[in-house]
Image (cartoon, rainbow, N blue to C red; front, side):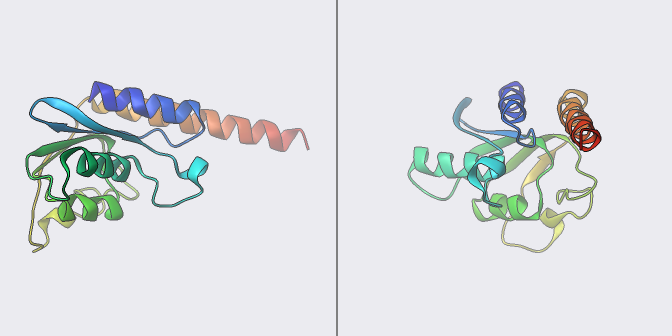
Length: 151
């Protein structure tokens, strides 16, 4: 999770919502991802999708049945669906997402009768993960307010 947090900080430094993700296989990180929606001008550029794509490439297949995904923020519905489709057996996340979290906060897509149901561990380094997000949005609001006052 510490490596995912570093990726989240990198995203924040580039003006992206600070979310980072890593895929672990046999006790080593094989893929990394961070949000790049603003830079990529693409709604699909989520940290989880980037990490899952990298893991599929690293392992040469779409079934990630021996991997664990670590992500700093609870996945949205799109990313939860990708986790199901990639057959990832275990998800570990830090902060809950009370607006879009789809692994227990708003809805739990893993509890529905899909063909795969990942195990979930939540709250890992939760305060630190949430703190990175809180600081990012606080700074963003301050910049916007300052910009509005300058007009």
